[in-house]
Length: 167
Length: 325
Image (cartoon, rainbow over all chains, first blue to last red; front, side, top):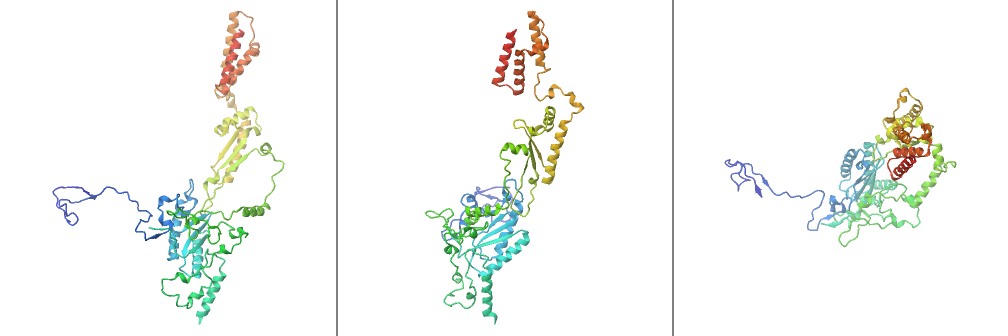
């Protein structure tokens, strides 16, 4: 820990955090820069945490061991509307998270096919089937009217989260 | 009391709606858990999973010779319970295998072509055959196509994901025509080439007009055809100021009245005067074979540029011309 000294004669007002250096006024504690990336990855622990394939792989494995969760032409060279489609994606994910509380086993997959939107979701069998049917119909109708294009929902039920490994 | 009738009604509803398929369907008799199930199953509140039994997947009931296009008639996401193949996908853990197809997100991510088996494509072609017409038998070679349809129009349509079908790049129209198929004489052709400038490719004799200044493709096409018409008619007209064409404006080297002709005639006259030969007239000099050769070699040198052939031809013609004297 390297501490910067600035201003010799001034007494510090708050001694609580600069106890060991009584003549510091504004002590700036810096350390050597630590390039730690914490984005979208699960830290390896004792080995008792079950993770899915999606969670286990960090973002740098996209296009190597993972695919893309959202497929549309907006990010291709010379194509438009990337931003609008991304905002739509964010809304759709939040919407589905709220509509199927506690049922989603993994991230959503959003596919755009001409003007249709296909949402593929892995769900746990938490709710009875008639409730699932209702929620599917409700979300499809609501989203189709909201986005003015056909929105289709494809569910796949699994008994529990599919574990890839334990970290 | 509505309690006994209510689950039955719900069960009917779910059975009626089985058109929507889950990949693993929950049993249609969902009314049963709502009544009093055997108390032995309900040991604790958090053991809800045993209550919902899943039906066996559809793959177990599929026969080997089933009609696959009816399972996947259109592009659909991967349904592991409807695809009877033991596919695995994923990076395996150490000393493991890739993950199975149930609950595999990677298989859902990728686009699949299960709806485009050869059998399905054959069926599509059969259905589309009614709407197709034969290629006209008279147009059986490229030359005939070019002869009857000399103008070629290129347009592009763009499709992308999103609710909008508009793409501003779709308004570009490219018109290509060979000048040899247009009725142009020498002057008209030279004038047209000067008018269009870069749009003419000399090696392939193709004039390319690319229009995108109008907002609609139809308008751009009309504009391109209008440009072609105007160019054609303008190139046939001769304006007053065209008579002032100088040697610098010429597209190719013309021997007649050029500096080279004057020089060679002067040289020949001087040689003849030195040798005190009989005076030969200009036309007779020009018509001698050596001077013709020289003229050809100079013309080819100027028009085609310097290469082995032209330079050696020039050398030979000069040697022959001066040896004559």
